[in-house]
Image (cartoon, rainbow, N blue to C red; front, side, top):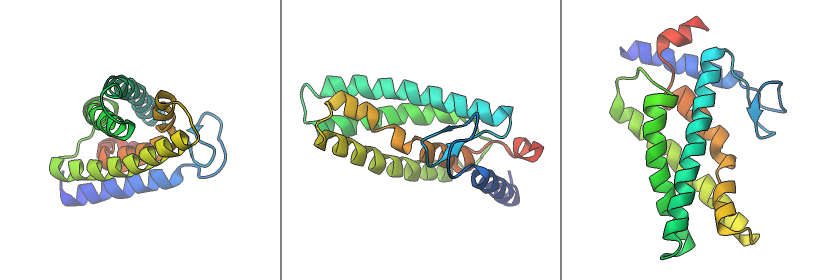
Length: 172
């Protein structure tokens, strides 16, 4: 993939991300009230479905690691370590299955992924701490901390980090 191809794919991804509904819920979309994801075609719907499957699986990984570590360390350390383990699982499952990408710039792509997960971590830890402040039990707080960042992470991963191959973008 040449630099021009990558720039074209970036522009196509940005355009698709901008086309997502920003307010309300559309029929057939997935969202959190403020932002609704409504896939434009079958391939985009499959990418979203696979992303959600990966998210569910990595949530299970995080809960198991958190529950195990919580017996020997504090809640913030247990949450952070479990988040790192689940995020590593998340990277490989998304990169090679849920959101396959034709990008050839693996180093830059990994850097973009690190930025995305840093944003996710801030949102997740903030939600976890807020839920614990409200006295939500630890495992529930860990699980409920995930949804607030899901939409933002999907948009960044699907349309930037692990964007679909340019040939798929051109069919739209």
